[in-house]
Each structure stands twice: as structure tokens, then as C-alpha cells.
Length: 246
Image (spheres, helix red, strand yellow):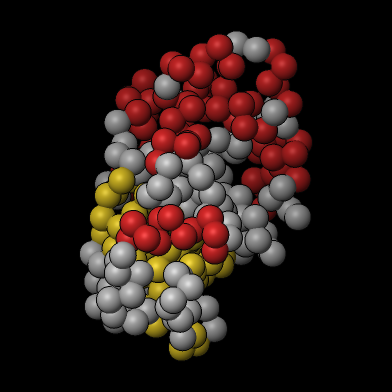
């Protein structure tokens, strides 16, 4: 079983289509999305409907929660949010999504499993606060909860493998291909499809082979300029467009 793990699509249809094509080229047999389907980008409806048609397992991310929860209504009524990338993107998603898309998004699970691993959007610890796993110290509470299991997460928009201080990092069998030792816990952030925040603008996704215990990080070029123009055409903050190019 080869499992394609994607996250943080952020309404970037150009990037999502490129990544889906790449997962097929790598013979992925299952597609899983770890949340943040909407937010920031111009095409939340198209991204949500594409993932729904594919019938893949999707989790809820924080932007998905902001979009579907009425707890955030007071924030979205504030006119000062128009230049805020987060809240402007959420407001745009609410306006663009069909009722059935909103209902689907609202009912996504927040925690699940794939063969050989646990999956969540942000972390296992402080679950309702969406903490970032950016450093080894950030990841340690989640690693302790994982024990000897492997966990896959989005949210940081970066690709990294975290391990407890008492264990070794997994060996790199080939560039960006890692062999995970048995019975050793790792917390793996899988990168962002729609808005990477590590060097290079290419869309990111991760391939997990639980039989071989191999993790492969992938990057895919796509038309970043077209995605940025779509953001500007939707009257979303220019910062969200520029972020795709830098």
C-alpha cells in the first residue's frame, strides 16, 4: 500500500491538480488529506468539490473549522479583516462554498489513522489549540503520546521528521527518502500543497509506504503565477498572492 498524504491545500486549485497528477505518477493507491482545504486561496469550492469527488479521507484543519464554526461570526463581521490573509480567506470561503460543501467540511474528523500511522492536522497534544510542530521541543509532547507509532501532520507547511532525543533520526536511503526503523516513533510534517513555507515555491506532498516503512518527500512545480493572479482577482490580500511566489 502506497499512501499519498497531502495537507494545507488552501484553496489553491492549480497546486492541487499538479499534486494529484504527481501522486498518480508515483502509483499512490490511497489519497489522504490532513486538513486546511480552504483559506488564503481563491478557489475553495473547486478544491472541496474535487476532494469530495475523489472520495478520499479528509481531516478538518483550523481554517476549515474557522469557516464552518459560528463561533467566528463576530470576527468575520469586522470590516478590518479585509487585509488579513487568514480572515479574508475564511470569509471568501464562506461566500464561495455551496451548502453541501460547508456541511461536508463541518463534519470532517479531526483525528484518524492510515495503515501504519496516526494522522491529524496539527498535533496530538493541545489538540483544540492547533499548535505548530516547528521544532524538536514543539514536537516532543506529541512524540511522547505516539510512543512507538508514526504520526503524520500538516499545519506547519513544511516537511520535517521529528524524533525523541533518545532515538536516532531515520536514515536517508535516497534524497528525501527515509527508512523508518520498526517500533520507533516519529512525528512527520508532510508539507503544504497550496502554500509551502520552506525554501522553494513548489507544491509539497508526502508518500508513505507502510509495508517498507518508507517516507518520501515530494515537490511539484505548478503555475504559481496563475494561482497568485486568481487570489488578486478574488480581491483577497496581496500578501496571500505574493507568498506563493517567494
